[in-house]
Amino acid sequence: VFTGAVVCAGAALLPDADHHNGTIAHSVPVVGRLLTRTIGTAAGGHRRGLHSLLALAGVIALGSVLGLVRFDSGTYGTVPLGAGLATMALVAFATRALGIARKSWAGPWLLGLTVATGIIFLAPTEILWLPLAIGLGFAIHLLGDGLTIGGVPWLWPWKPRPPAWFDDVPLLGDIWQGNGHFALPVLGRAGSAREWLLGCVLTVYLACALVYEACSAVGYDVLALFN
Ligand SMILES: [Zn+2]
Image 1 (tube, rainbow, N blue to C red):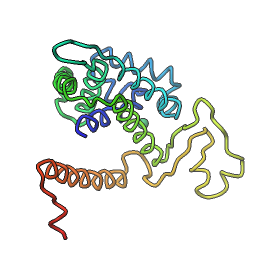
Image 2: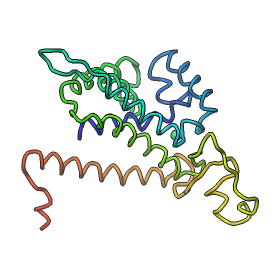
Image 3: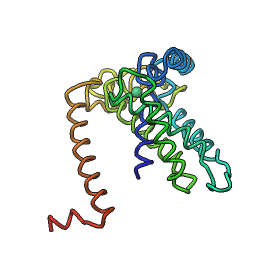
Image 4: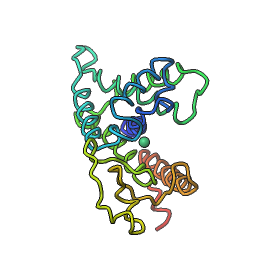
């Protein structure tokens, strides 16, 4: 659960690798900006190609391939090298996004290396865990963006246009937009108070789930307290 959650959190930042001033851009000096600028151009700009079902399928495929990169070390058994490298980068991104070690770019990578070393020994043997964790994180980012006004071009590179009368009906024009983006804009603009509130609710839920899982791990059932 822990390894999956860490990889999932890092993967949730990947769609914004199309933004030259985002978390990933600042993860490595010069190279980060260059890489994100290139990705942004290839994807047609921010919230374009990297925010689509096609990109989601692409990262799941990439995760599957990385999950297969493993070698037999003899004494230490099978070493999942691909999962380790993916974990290192994703943990570095997640650490940066959380605002830990903001001053140095090397700090998050060192933490990533530490977690990745652990993963190499603790990684689940199921081959599917890596693409599953990466795909889940990526998909949750797209769903979250889909709840804001800007929406998501799910069908990119196809940008289907809504019928002209869509714009005249309240709400309908926000749900299927003229540029081929789709949204269920219950959160309003990115960075709105509603978005912050949703973040708070999810954080409280996560804290409760962590306490529950930690207690279960040592054989203590917290829910029994409420019965
Ligand atoms: Zn995004």
